[in-house]
Amino acid sequence: MKFLKRLIAQSVETLTRVACVLALAGLLFLVISVVVPGPLPVVIAMGVGHGIGILACACYLLAIVIDTSKRDRVAAVTTTPPKGDDQRKTDA
Image (cartoon, rainbow, N blue to C red; front, top):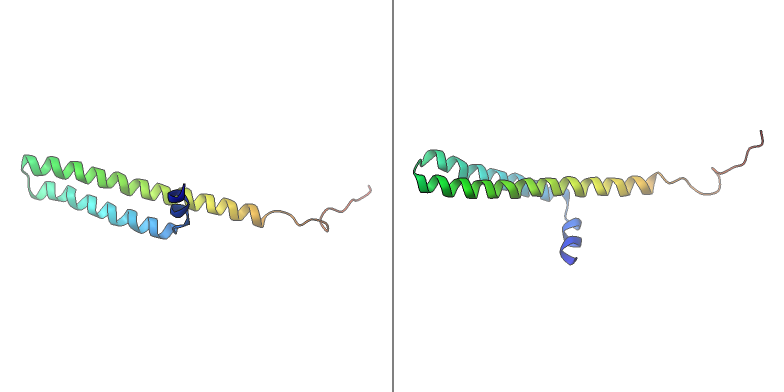
């Protein structure tokens, strides 16, 4: 639970940057498989590259979820009507 609170407290911008760096690292491993076309380097590069790519995608999706939940909370707080003045009774 402590990890989740700390993760939510992190900024969305930081998670997005981490996702970008991980995606570039994953692409680097995939490019290595093209540059060094041996069987073992290709298998290792594809496995590691896809694993890093999945982590990048997960970081980006987590950033989207956190950003959406923060915006929903802010919208809920700012759109609540004030009590008293707006609740006037009108006789028709």
